[in-house]
Length: 301
Image (cartoon, rainbow, N blue to C red; front, side, top):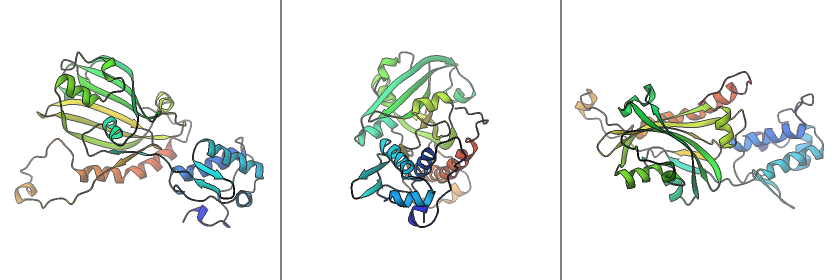
């Protein structure tokens, strides 16, 4: 049960002595409950009078807060029916599949855009050593869905193999599709990790996020049809617009030889491994939100 389920109970007290105006405090309190789904879409908010009593503020403070939430598209207000949490367009990514974000969003009907931020040649380091080349192509992109920034993608490719790849090839295009069409490379397997991380100022600016917002990081290595590593990537997702979906299946019975450790695993992590990571993601987000709220904490991505 949330605070909104008990209209007569007092909510979190606002700080009248704070330098932050009361209407912004109230907006932030209601906004947080909407974004963390304590108030799911369709939930009716208390009336203006109830909010006044609960938080000990004037009607003008309540109206300013509700107006700001309306402008953000988080609530809908109608004459005679009060305020309700607005439906939200969430973009779902199936992280256990090899298809990229662009292909998945496009197949779901979203209008996908890609801006190439940079494409340079760099020396390989420990993070890209798996590609097996001395130099790598370093690609940075900003991806949008229906005009809203949802992901910043850093990708590293073996430079000798993809030396003819140009930035214009990737404008509003899927990297995986370009690799298939231009180089005959098909992504067939890979390794994936999910975690919640803080972002630096540039990342938060690109995703249009507040300074205290954690982001969802998907990292991995992709392999082609011959089992060769062809891509190392890190993708920072907007936490309010992207949802990670995972299909869970019952694991097959373990054969005696496999139980003894005589069967090696392939390059792709199984759904259960990704699911285990995803189950910890919510806890990571809550922990990080608390940690990065301090202005003295350095943030990197």
